[in-house]
Length: 153
Image 1 (cartoon, rainbow, N blue to C red):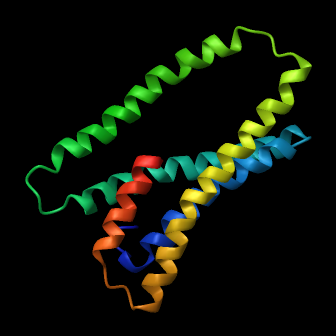
Image 2 (cartoon, rainbow, N blue to C red):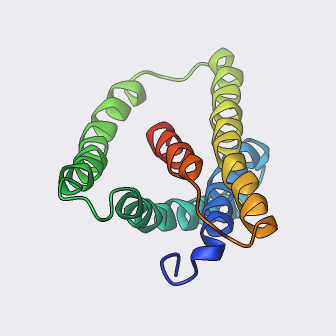
């Protein structure tokens, strides 16, 4: 959908990033397992939609160039690397028992990660408003900002 509606690409990306960041922050407030499941579902929708969005945006940045393929390979390599290494790191962390005193620290980490995600998504909101005001005419700064956000994400 993002490649068919170029005028809405920033709004779609912003919505996807918010559907990841907001549930991450609100997950710390879940006192009911069903609320926890609802926030996890919203996060999953956002995370699942970010993969194809990043693919399309990466192709958009490097379109028309002969050497764009390695960047697409790099995106998929790091995704696969994170998928492989993430559970290995989580296993090490989960082997230790969580004491009552470390729980506030974990809550703060979830809030910080969620707020950072929302902060990086706010750039897409600014670009969506800017594109709407000028009738969607792509500019060079947009590619630069997009490449920075893809690196951060």
